[in-house]
Length: 403
Ligand SMILES: Cc1ncc(COP(=O)(O)O)c(C=O)c1O
Ligand SMILES: [Zn+2]
Image (spheres, rainbow, N blue to C red):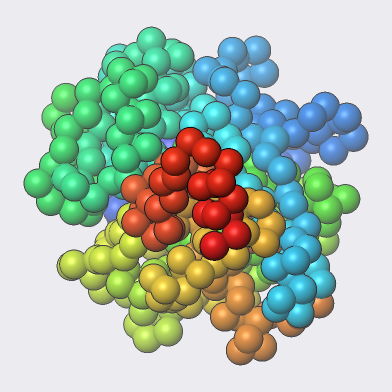
């Protein structure tokens, strides 16, 4: 029913093969299904949304028991006050920050760690800008498999480090950036036989594609006109695009959204490639942005992501740190949606794309907010006015409230 397939030369491999890239050409791999033989029972089902609701399109035998802590089923909010301020009428936010560890990574990890169990792997590992490590730590704990995580020293938001530590991962702080940590963990997995759970692992992306399924289902099995999301290592944009493509191939939806990838100005190699060099990525050697989750200079899934952008008629743009923070505050104060900086890039990007006419004000646009506000409390404390200290008297309090 499913196998691995190289996106460059189409060579196929059994799903049980322990490889990260095509042995023939080095291309990225993806999971391919024999769609003719699959019965998509979830379309008629009244079951609540969750990653495993869509298991007909996940790469496991029907009787396999997954490692799960109830991921997915996140809300799709229709924006109200914020939408009015930009003159938009059909903008939605899918808040992936409401997954078990507070980010969309849980969708990938429930599938990825389940695959590690199925394959009999004894240690799981990843490099991470933070959220992947938090997620791997929790699923490693649930499966009782040791997890090793490599983080760029001093560049990971506090909440994410706390999660990785508390759930019992072996946390290593690498003197280098994320791209260095990823290169190292790939070597470590090759030499030690650890199971690599970065987004180069195609099974992880299978879990993440369920974002597309939930968006389409929430809109009455229809695709939005555009889907806007932050891009770092470029796994999520590739996964969500694949999800929409599968629904279309199965005749469940009749269109695919224009995929719009948003990067931070100081870490925008996909935007550069999209606008200048087409399929050639020129790595950004010193990526820098307040959105530490997407502080990535050499995105490993670039080939898949660029395909998603070109084939869907989408676009890739960058936004400044100021625009990111502005969108984060607007989401928090106009809509009651608390997100970390990287997540706010989607909304900052949407605003820019509506202002320049790339997205029309009445189009159905879905922004993905990828991680929760509490992931990065230090940045919030730096940004906001501190609490006002008052005496324990009503007089002092009313004076502070009314100025
Ligand atoms: C909050 C958040 N948003 C976006 C991303 C980027 O996702 P991807 O690397 O799949 O492009 C990450 C990745 O770490 C993240 O943690
Ligand atoms: Zn190949």
